[in-house]
Amino acid sequence: MSDATATSEAVCDAFPVTNRNKVKRAHERGSYDKAAVFAILDAALLCHVSYVIDGQPYCTPTLFWREDDVLYWHGSSASRMLKHLKLGTPACLTVSHLDGLVLARSGFHHSANYRSTMCFGTAHFIEDDGEKRKALAGVVDRFYPGRTLGLRPINSQEFKATMVVRMRIEEASAKVRAKNVVDDEEDYALPIWAGVIPVQMTIGADDPCPRQRPGVTRPENLSAYREGRRLDEIFVESQRAYERGSVAD
Amino acid sequence: MSDATATSEAVCDAFPVTNRNKVKRAHERGSYDKAAVFAILDAALLCHVSYVIDGQPYCTPTLFWREDDVLYWHGSSASRMLKHLKLGTPACLTVSHLDGLVLARSGFHHSANYRSTMCFGTAHFIEDDGEKRKALAGVVDRFYPGRTLGLRPINSQEFKATMVVRMRIEEASAKVRAKNVVDDEEDYALPIWAGVIPVQMTIGADDPCPRQRPGVTRPENLSAYREGRRLDEIFVESQRAYERGSVAD
Image 1 (cartoon, rainbow over the protein chains, first blue to last red):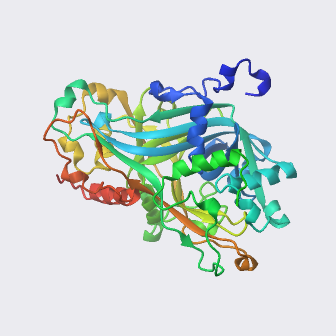
Image 2 (cartoon, rainbow over the protein chains, first blue to last red):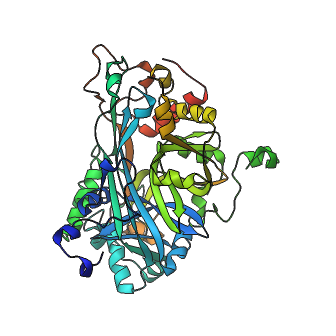
Image 3 (cartoon, rainbow over the protein chains, first blue to last red):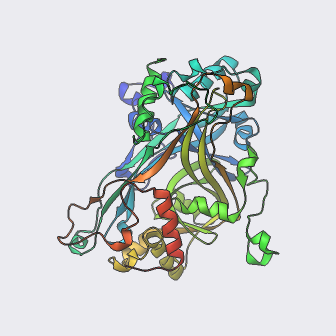
């Protein structure tokens, strides 16, 4: 949805609902609010992108990043996906977080807690070198705010070898399950253990490069990536820092 | 690949390589071995399935399970995906595990450690009630071996409301990155911190159903799901237990 078609603030805050993104199943779990969609996207580094070649669907895992309602991903010019997207092609980018295993008193009510979003649009290569250069800084700084400034700059060979794809989100939906087990009323009386086993993605202990130059210490701008912390929370923080244009360190 | 086309043991151990599943980029990370593909599948509960409706690709996150080279997933008859698969349709089921963030001395060599597999085939509804019933026990017992026996059995309404999809893997590829940063030779001399920040999915503290019957304790067959353990390791163990037909409790 471009600014030109936005007729009210309420419209701006949500993606339009069409047959493509309408949540068909368990619709009480669904939302079209931009805030809900962005919160799920911003908690992730990995997405799955679907696209079609000759009627065959492909589901490719890749890193992505977001600026406003534009999603970016990148890769080598040798990648199947990126060759195909050259001319602009319908795509669906999905992000999912598994948050818990839900064990019920019947098989039917077993479930999972999760947060997921499906984003629809048309994926294009970025042809403009200036736009591509800006986007390529984003892939690092969005996750590690300010890091690009301290790196060996990109060279022309790397710049040529990297393709960046942009996709404005035309429609999207978010779906969340975040609650304990829901059993049939009569089943609560059964002597069966039920509940949620939460799961989370957490940071482990650093594994520094074995060829690290002596005296080089971990920079302050990576301090959020501490052992034991939740990865999704760090990614949301780093997205906020990136949006503030933070280039600390 | 059906048994009829298998001409040697070597062929049985790997999926055929075609234009559809050939790893085009970073092919040194790729494999077509069944063992490599199954190891990645078995470490997961969540997959992303891609399918096409009227030229539009959809990428749907869903739970799945495996028996030999057949993948299963399920859902309500109200789901968009499942309605579409009724007649048999090409699909791609992808599983990805994020294992680490790879920080390099240049933006170009930033990467991620991961394990992923893309599986191609034709997805069909299970029409036969007996086969469907067996598959539906699998969705619970594959993750929680032996649990189905202790549950309130499925009723006919639930059985009707649940659709199960099966897809024999015709082709698949696995792709793994599991190493420290690889920088350009001349960049190792730069005073820039580089290395891997490992990430893992771990179990949290139980959140039992608030309506748990007094005296009901967590069953022995869930003992693998202990706080702090890696989820992917538990899933591989439970798949092995499921394959052994273990119904302990």
